[in-house]
Amino acid sequence: MPVLMLAAGLIAALAFAVMGYLESQRTEQVVVLIHEVPFGQQLVAEDLGMVEVPLHRPVPLAGITDTSLVIGQYAARNLGVNDLVQPGMLMAAPPDQPVYPNGEQLTVNMVPVPFSVAALGPVNYRDRVNLGFSDPSGDPALCDAAIAAAAGETPSRMTVSQGELGTPRPYACRLLSSVRVLWIEGTTAYLEMTPYQAHTIWALQAAGLPMWGERYGSTSDVLSAFDRLDIGQVTLSALLAPAPEGEPADVDANELPGAHTPLPGTNSPVPGSEQP
Image 1: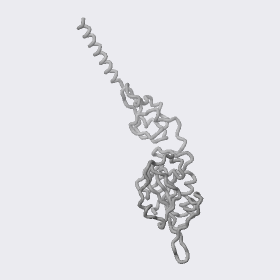
Image 2 (image 1 turned 60 degrees about the horizontal axis):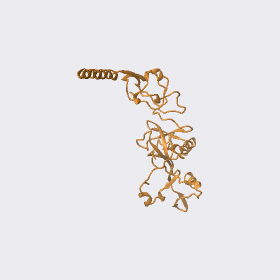
Image 3 (image 1 turned 180 degrees about the vertical axis):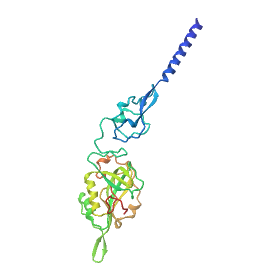
Image 4 (image 1 turned 180 degrees about the horizontal axis):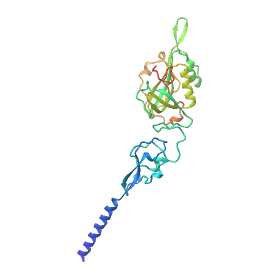
């Protein structure tokens, strides 16, 4: 009897093992992408393929088994080749704001402004940039008058001696900080800003003032707007002082004054197309 019971147990265990193995080998087809689909683009049948996956698999690999549930939907993010299509990747309606080829979406009530990348170097759409302009005439009304008025102070007029007349010094003025880069095409970057900021940029462009920009970190401290400096104001201590340390301000870049603005351009249809 013990021998028979042992034999029966072995047979049962073997049977369960075979059944488990056969079950583990079962597969089903799920939908995958065979083309890249940027955010906001509608998916068509030509974008989709099928691949065999184990029937019993982790939840993150569940996928969708019916292409009819995918065709006609819109990409909720940038989708890449061989991505296993999941419900969270899809949305039923197209985005209600303009979308760029890289999937970046223009924020509500913002506008894009073209800006030359010549003075920025190897910038990408994940970067932020600071923007400014230079005034060879030294007219303080274009920069320090605005910031001083906001602070309730009297604007300064830095001059150098020229006979009996005082001539205002040329200066550079940092206008905006932490401007978002939406998209780069060739040598032109499209920067996101408010309509008023964009209007300001085009006004500077119309005045023929040299404009400049600098690449900046997305988590770096936001710099002061209308920050004016001429060569006569430079001090050694400020020049050699290290960058401030500490935690960067936890702010929403979309809410910063000037957090979305493009720049560099000198007498050109595209700001920044001529390096200062």
